[in-house]
Image (tube, rainbow, N blue to C red; front, side):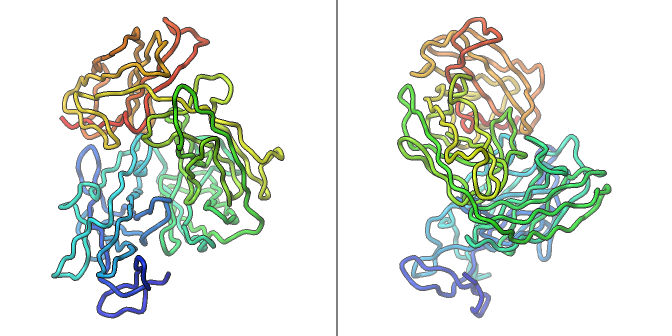
Length: 457
């Protein structure tokens, strides 16, 4: 819906149980900074996304027009009640910058902000969400140890769904494998930018969204500091539909979220990747269904939320994350379904550094935090637990095996010091054997989102 046609600085917005009307805009205000040094970052791009990862705003560039160093203002689309107050709806923020990991990315997730929490500022006649009312608008980016200095930017034609698009740059000729793709997100106007591209490399730039195919663009070999342009237009051909099964074992329950991650963005050590708008679904009691899947290669990932269950990755049947390739609007191989998943209860993680775990990352204030957990139904026969800590980029920082007990705890030894301000992920794997042999039986593991913590001494 176009938001024009209003006067006095107001915008046209949808009204719950009513017709669109003119209201004061909703503005999200915050800053972007280096997570380690705290230095404010200029030139970072920030966009608001809805629950389906579709854009709710145009992009704001920090230190852009009218904002100070490191600051951004985002005017966000929001459904209203009859009085003009934003109704409950959740948004997340994405930030990209040269020399930095995208947020969210790696082990870090973006926590949702309720647009209904906006307050009316009489002086500016705007509904505002700021760092004074929520810490979630203060974004901190992790610097990359290595990465290119070139970027590509352009526009993406509006898809029929209106849900925006994920834009992926892969080394030419494309399909270079997992963890080779770099991404940007198209904002409400279709504008995008992808940072940290390598010099001397040609990239295939593709857009992904539910219900539409795009014609990819191949760049020239980029030079350091290049700012290439790639405009993405809608392509022809149909999109695909396919189903997959879910097998619930050991008391696991439905529903779970199932998402399609573009293969070149998949990080195997974290079992995560980036999903296009509209390509996350909630399963039923026995399976899941996707419609409108564009051509491309995808990892099908299940049990992605904090719901008490995880994907069984024991290595026996139906425990790998399937790779599905769509060409010409059909699943390659002629199948109309993907392999089934086994879903099992997670290892019951209790505390990180004395703080109870939740979807909000735990804050650790000591260099050698203690981790605690206990046995559950899926890992009742565990003989060994493997405790792993990964940094925000998915690099393993520490791994240690301990004999299993009903209640368990272990202290991080600090041999590789935690970095102040950085985010980490704790993962605890349960094995049937002790010691763990080369060919082992993994019974379960902790939920990824519950294991995220930040070190703030």
